[in-house]
Image (cartoon, rainbow over all chains, first blue to last red; front, side, top):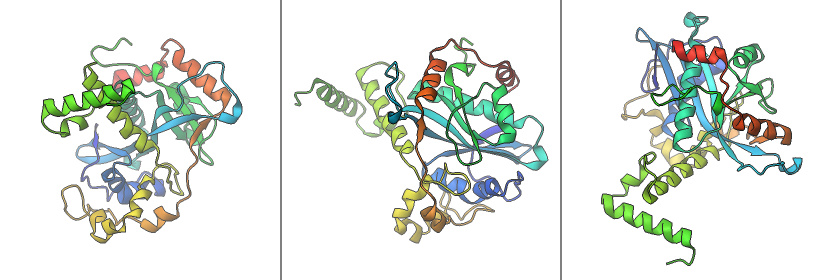
Length: 166
Length: 145
């Protein structure tokens, strides 16, 4: 599978089993991307679109009402949000989700090098929490209703660039 | 010249960069690979871009993150010109791509910012300060990717 930025790909046959995700990819992803509101990447196998992910940049803020921290970190902290991830039903259970997560991790590494980034954030379905936990994501408070917010610190993302150390 | 040394530095480096390249487009290149003063200016510009992107708080009903295009609805003239229906090359929408649903964006609930409790903030910072410890599963994914 190759992962490339969304650009004129045929999405008409894509179906991941989640109507909201399907609709987003088909109707809005390129519109949002054109506005630079986020970026969608698609996975291609044999010229067929088999999955997609959408990322955007957010900020961690500290709850000021919670009192002073022992240290005084430079909040807000930039974090890369894996906002949407969908795999076509014909390509599910083949490990493609993991390939997409690796792509997001590399994006976070690049972002860190460019402007700073403390990690990857995802709002996970309950059924996917175990998957993300195995990859090193830890739960943090918040998240959309019915979803579990999870965070992977940038320090635990392997650096596989040629000069990487881990 | 401002009495603030930092403002003076910024102004001087901007002038330097503009005169060196002859255009302002050079300033919009992603991030400098040097640690020169001019590089610092470019980094600051890139940071501004990130902050601007992250300040958008519109959302959608199904997933509250990504209706950041709400700001576009402030410019109905764009929609009137049909620009939302054109792709990057100015051609008609791709197969399966509908015109953008402006009403849905306008009516989408506003998203709360990402706020960490004190305990979560402490935990996040502790993770960032700890030695790297990637999970075996993630390492395996990187090896196989």
